Amino acid sequence: MRVFKTAFDRRSLAPAIAAGLLAATFQQARAQDNQAGFEAWVVRLYGDEIARNKSPASPSGDATLDLFTPEVRALIVESRKHTLPASEPDGPILHLVLGWGALPNREIILNRVASTPAPDGERRATVDLGIAGNARRLIVTGVFDSQAKRWRIADIDYGSGSLDATLIGRMRRMASWPLR
Image (cartoon, rainbow, N blue to C red; front, side, top):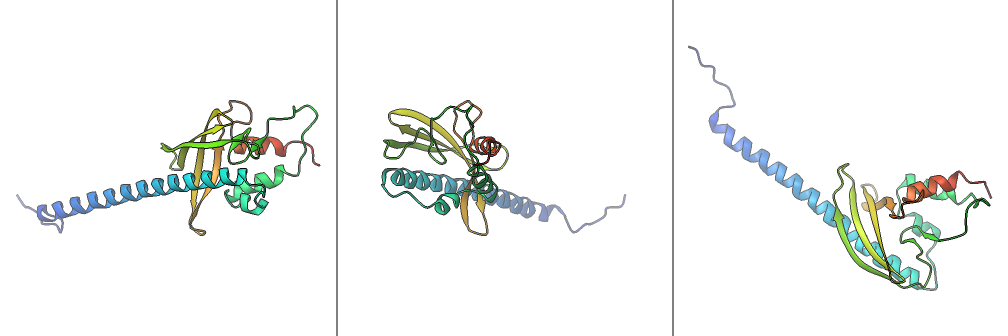
């Protein structure tokens, strides 16, 4: 019986396995850091947005739009060109980041932000707010903009259970309304 020697024998197997495990552990740790970074960004974002909502000076439209991905930003800009049709009821009012009913100077409390599993590889965080004493739960989906080196909002689930349960759904529906 003839035995062929290969460059990959038993002695090199253990270091190769160790290197593979180390690489996998590093990738997992990096993903956890990435999620922790997203969660911290969401905490800062909502803290800043609540403070802005209390202040008499509202932020510029560009500052608000800069929070979103280019795709969502384009939907928001397009939706602003349209007007509410007569068949739509007035109110409640949607604040793009804080959700339904977050009117200026209304009491808004950030109760909790927690990571939410995202099977599609995106980052998600559950945001629990109190708006005028009413509990609201939002789920923020974010993507990291590697060029700008910052997080951007890809969508927000407002949890309202209506046609406008998500930011993208609302903006798409508004874009179908009559032009101003």
